[in-house]
Image 1 (cartoon, rainbow, N blue to C red):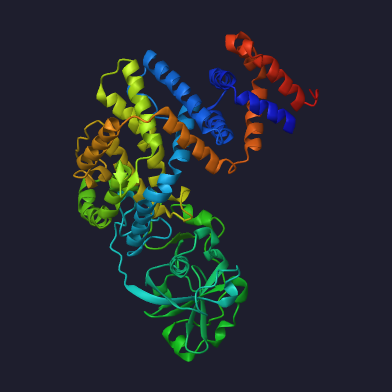
Image 2: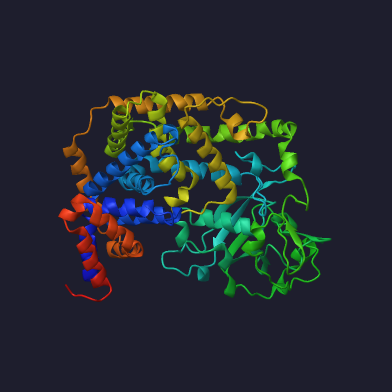
Length: 557
C-alpha cells in the first residue's frame, strides 16, 4: 500500500492532475458539502510541506471561482461568503496555517484576555446552572430577568493530597488553601468549577482534575466534615420541582474551608459532625444518601426534566411548561428595561473588545508586522477585480471581508477553545457570539438602520460599529498602499513555513483518505484525464490506473 500511496502522492504533486481531480469531484452531483470540506482539508494536510505549490493551486482555484461567480447570475458580493467549494475551504486552512505565528505572538493575547474578562465578569453575579442565564451578560437571550438575592463570599478551597492523582498536579504547598470568590447562590458544581479554576489557574483545562471526579467537603472545627452535593436527601422538593442545592441551602458561611476530595476517598461517616453543626443545620441525620450531580443530559434540557424521577430541576429561575418565553422576550418594554444592564456589562468589557479589534485591524501592531499572507491574498483579490473590470469598491471590500475576517477571525472570536486549552461555558459562548456579531457588522458595507425590532446586540454596539467600520476601511486601504510582495519573498516565506511544520501531520493517512475519493470516482476521473490535452502528454490516466492496480494488489509495477 505504501508504494501505491507514494505513486498517488506523485500524481497529487502534478498540477494538471490535482486540478482535474478537484474539478471532477465538484462536477459530480453526489459529491456532498461534507465531502468538499473533507477533500479540501485533506489536500491542505497533504501539501503542508509544499506550501508554494499549495498556494499556486489555491490561486488557480480561486481565479476559476471568481470567473464562475461573475459569469453566473449570483451577485459578486456573494463570493467567498460560504464554504461551498473546495477552494473556499482551502482558503480557510491556508490562512489558518499562515497566520499561526501572528496568532501566537500577537493576536492570541487580546483574544485570551477578552475570554478571561467575560468569564470573570459573568462569575461576579449569579449564573443559573440549568438555563445558563446570568445577571451579567452581553446577550439578552441569556440575561436573568428576575431579581435574585445573593451575597458574595470568600471560601478557602484546598485539594486533598490524595486527589492530586497526576504528577505535577499538586498545588503549591501542602494542603494549600486558595481564597476563592464565590456566591451563596452558587450550586455545589459551580463552586467546584470556581475552586478548580483558582487552584489550577495556570494549568491547561485538559490537565486539571474533572469536577465530576471530585466531591466538595465542608470542614468545620476539628472533626466536622460534610460532603456537599447538587442533590442529596436534603434537596428541597416542591410538587414536581426540585431545587438544586446551593451554599445558602447548606448555610455555608463566609470564610468557610472547603476541600476538593477524590470521590472514592470521601465516604466518611458523616454522623460525627459536631453539635454546633447539628444546631445550625436542621438535618435530622447527617448520614445522607450520596448522590452525584445531575447528569449532563438533565443540565442541557431547558426544563431539566428527569424522566426517571419525574422531577423538574431548577436553580435560580423556574421555566414552566408552555411559558411563552419568546413572547415575553419580544416585548420591547422588557428589552428597554434590561438594556441598561446589558450596557453596564458591555462598558466593563469595552476595553478588551477594542484591544482585540484594534490588534486584528492594524497593519503594524505593537511592533508586529502584517503577515505577508494577508497582503499577498488581498493584492490577488484586487488584481482579480481589475481583470474582470469590477470598479465597485464595495465588492472588493466584501471579498476581503469574506476571505479573512469573516472566514478566519470570527471563528476564533466565537470559539477561543479552538486556540486555547480552556472550557467555554454556555453563558460565555453567548457573550462571545455578541462580540462576533459586532465584528461581522464592522466588516459589512451596508448601513444598519436601527429600529424597534433591531436585536439588542446591534443596539448595544450602535455607537461603536461606525468607529469599527472606519478601522476596517483604513486597514484595507493601508494594506493596499503597502509595497507589493515579490514572488521571491513570498516563496521564501512559504518555504520556511513548510520547513517549520513539515512533520506535524501524518500525510500518508491524508493521502490514503484522498485516494478513497479518487477510487470512488475512478471512472469519471479516468475519462476526464483521457480527454485533457496536458493529461494525455503526461499519461496521467495510465498512471492513475497503475496506482489503482498497486492499491488493489494486482501489480507490483
